[in-house]
Picture 1 (tube, rainbow, N blue to C red):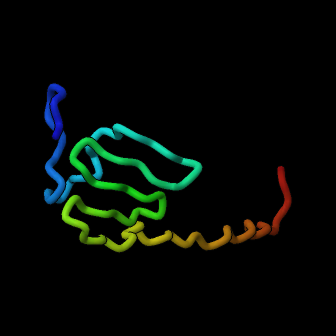
Picture 2: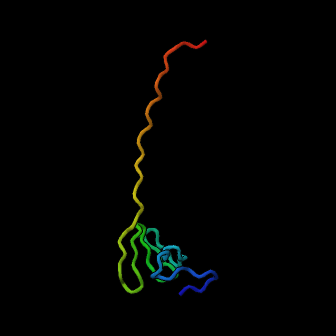
Picture 3: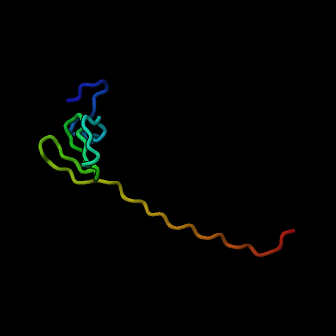
Length: 77
């Protein structure tokens, strides 16, 4: 399906999400990639043979709040 220079990864390759979009519908939450994969904004995918790939978002990092600086006792010279 991909006809541009530097071909995109095939639909069944691990990096298939890197293919170029040929139709994009952000208002509906999906894009059609040049390798035939439909990529959804929740990171789910629909492969050309009809198989669905569930969303696979990276884990959300949790950040602990910063601790307030401790006061140093003593006098300044």
